Amino acid sequence: FLSRHCARALQSGKMGPCLSTPKHASLTLDSMRDRDTDDYFQTVSRVFHPKLDVAAVVFRGYFDVTTRVITKPSLEKFFKESQKEPSPDSRLDDTYDVDAAFDTFIMSDGNFLVGKSTVDEQKMHEPMSHYFINSSHNTYLTGDQLLSDSSTDAIKRALLHGCRVIELDCYDGGKAGPIIKHGGTRTKAILFKDAICAIEQDAHTVSEFPVIVTLENHCSVAKRAEMATILKQALGGKLFTPPTGNMETWPSPASLKNKVVIRDKLKHKQDKKVKVLGSGKNVEAPASEDVAEENEKSDDDEMDDDGVDEPESLELIDASAPLAHLVTVENAKFKTFADAMTPGGKCFSCSWGEAKLLSRVAKTEKQTMTKFTEKHLLRCYPAGHRFLSDNYDPSPAWQAGAQMVALNFQANDKPMWVNRGKFTANGDAGYILKPKWLLDPAVGEPQRPSKTFAVTVLAGAGWENFKFAELVGAPDTYVKISVTGNVVDGKTQQTNVFCDQRSGPHCQPFFDQTLFKFETKQTELAVLLFTVFDKDTVSQDDFLAQYSCPVSMLRHGTRVLPLYDESGLYIGNGKYGKACLLVKIE
Image 1: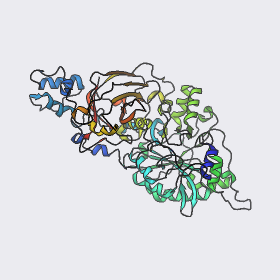
Image 2 (image 1 turned 90 degrees about the vertical axis):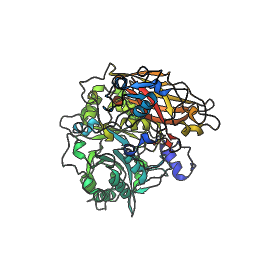
Image 3 (image 1 turned 120 degrees about the vertical axis):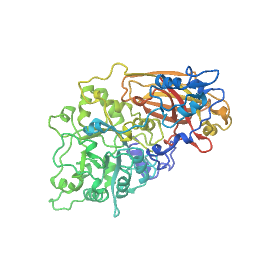
Image 4 (image 1 turned 180 degrees about the horizontal axis):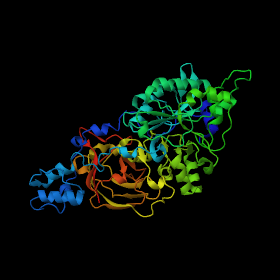
């Protein structure tokens, strides 16, 4: 991590005010739902390179090459054999010009690489610990972890992008109430009540399934009581109040529809310095940021939930009861896995940094981890040295069964693209049921491939959107195709480099000769990532576009792959049309 020394340097002003930060997402408040209403195929570019007879390539073997006519029976055969689906319309014309058939049936509504995803309601009734949950880290930050602003827009954007776990770092603040900021840094603060109001407004705009608000809580006892009042007033009926007594099983996502769930520790380190009622002195917490600076930072930017809890006074427990009574997901410590799995014991949540997760997984039998993450909630978060808000590879954490793999949503990096692709499954619900081998210790990891497929990258369109990637000349385009989402199936392949003209039809790339084969054992976890680059011989290759999707949702045949920029927005405008790749899956 940046360490206490670096944090103190920032506070003292000995560190410069400027950091070289990677690009972060602009706070354009776009929503996953925008893609459902956007009429993509009305605005996608349909201009391909003239040297590539794209219609002839797609319908090869199904049309008369002399007349360039494809008949109704041949078209039906194409859909059955190549697309592996029924022909789209029983009222097909008897014949089509092959170019017209391409425009009508390939560059047509709905012919995306993956079909429209819907929520499988029947699979939403298991305990929350049985799901991967779309999760964010320090959600309120707009940029790096040290100097950037806190903003309710950052929280709103994460929710609109499907996030279901919002993290807030809470401090006492002043008369206006508790605040949200990254302690020990120069990040600017926002009010806790404003953050909660933002959550209330958009918690269920994209998904009706529960939002978990995880509190890294450095507030004094009195301020925590104030937080409880704010939560009740701002969230109203959306706030889930847990039943009394220990929960041995988590509620299901279906049972928590349109609810906001609170995750917090019930015991806080800052309370150890509070003087106890009955001692002849008032209960008075020290300045919470001072407490936080002493307690919160070690190897990582959050406290790992391991070790032994220390007892608290009864008076302090009573004083903090208003907020404690609202906590459904208790963030707690445990000594050993055996203790955590005591029969009849309560379910709880814990947080591990990315390094600790890798270390624990390496030292722990697979059956033990599976048993633990079947009952309890495990959250993984970025290492503290990632102060530029870059992200770690979420694949090892997902493969270990961690439900809440928290990422910096403001980052425009590969882990976020993979995360977005993964959670397009199950109708953007933000909850994906884990495979059986991550729920039942008796079920071993898959040893043989469950899916084998080949990818042909045929061509691209809308490439004039990238003409300014090079100061002079046309971009040298190539496409990387990667399987990620788990450790076992990871593989990357790459097309040849295409370069012709800077604009016009000749700028559109084509790669028809490229065929890539993949096989996946852990198909339920696998994500297919496409990244487009401009090759540079004197510096790092320039990123142009990206797209990702679950391998399990791939559609057979020739499909259109929409291209997104770093922040997940469609690439293209009215002048050049939206950019896309044409690919074939076999």
